[in-house]
Length: 60
Image 1 (cartoon, helix red, strand yellow):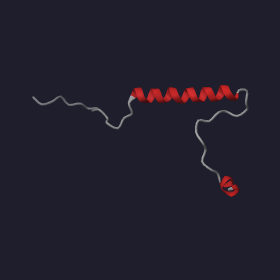
Image 2 (image 1 turned 180 degrees about the vertical axis):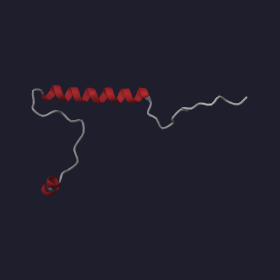
Image 3 (image 1 turned 180 degrees about the horizontal axis):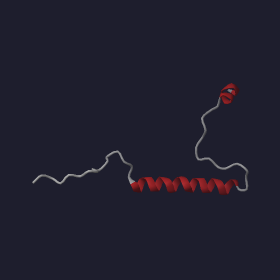
Image 4 (image 1 turned 90 degrees about the horizontal axis):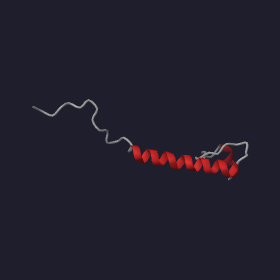
């Protein structure tokens, strides 16, 4: 008899769960540290740098 049919074979492009969780913990830790360092502030902390705006290009 042939091998049993697997309707959901392993996805070789899927992220490793342990790696993804570690990255999530690292990002949360960085955001929490940034929040503690700036508290009390009116603007929330951002873990990403925004793209340059048209106004930024004019200043350069």
